[in-house]
Length: 398
Image 1 (spheres, one colour):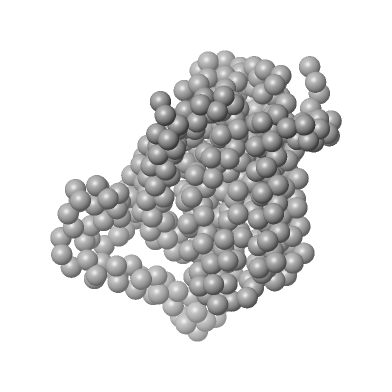
Image 2: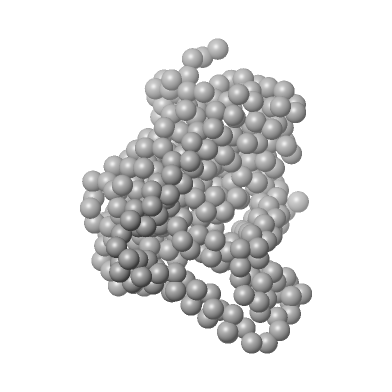
C-alpha cells in the first residue's frame, strides 16, 4: 500500500482522537467540578486524556505479540511522556502569552513536587524492574504504584474539603458556595443555547459526542459517565487506526515499529492531553494544566503499560525481549528519566515561566526527536550516544 495512504490514516486517527477528546473534556469538567486545583488535572483529566496511550499499548501488545508488541507499546508511552513533559507546558505558556496576554505563569511548587517526585519514582522503577524476561509481577508493581499515587491524591483532596468545613460559616457561605454556583451556571448556559432538538445521527457523523449523548438535556452524573465511556470507545477506535498507520509506515521505511511509535504514535496520542492542558491554561488553571501533563505521564508509565503487560503475561506467559529491542528500550528509559529531571528542575527553579522556557523545552524535544531519528537511520553519532547511555543503565546484561 502507498505510504501516503498510511499518513492519511494517521491523520484520520488523530482527528478521531481529538474530536473524542472534546466530549471527554466536557464530561470531565462536570464530574471534577468540586475537585481542588491541581487534583482534577492529575486524576480525571490525566486518566481520561491518556486513554489513547492505554489503548495503543493494548493494541500493540495483543496484535503483534511479544517483542514487537511490547517495544511498540513502551515506545508509544515513553514517547508520549517526553512529549507531555516538554511540548505541552511549552504550548500552555504560548497560549497564555498570546491569547491571555500574560508574559509569564507561575505553578504551585507543591503540585510540582507532589507529581514530579511520583513520576521520577515511577521511571526509576521502570528502569530497574523491566528486564529481558517480562512477567505479570512487573505489570502488577506498576499498577500498585499508580494506585498508591491515586490514594494519596484523593486523600489530599479529602483533607482540603475537611479543612474548608472547619472554616467560619460566613466564609463557607461566600467563598465555598460561589464556585459551585459558577460551575452550575456554566453548564446551564450550554443547555439554554441548545433550544432545538439535536439530530443525534448528524452529531455522530461529525463526531460531536457531546451533542450525541447529552443532546438538549441537562448533564448529570449518569450522562457524564456515559459520555466518558462513549468517548473512550471512540478514542480506542482512533488508536487502532493510529497503530495500523504507524506499522504501515514503519514497514515502508523498513525500520522497527518502535521508532514510529516513539515519535508519530506518541505525538498523536498526546492530542487529548495537549487540548485539555491548553484550555486549562487559557482559563487560568495553571496547576491543572501542568498536573494534567505530569499526571498523564504517571498514568502512561504505570497503568497504560502495567495493565496490558499484566493481562498479556497472565494469558500468554512471560515475554522474552530480544537483545536489540532490549537495548533500545533501556536507552529510551534512561533518556526519559533524564529529560524528566531536566524539565522538573526547570519548572521548580524558574518561578515565572515565560517565552524563554518555551525555547528551552522545544530545543530539548528536538534533541530527543533527532536522536530517535538518528537511531532509526543508524547514525554514527547517535550510535555512540546510545552506547554511552547503555553503559549508564542499571540493567545487568544476561
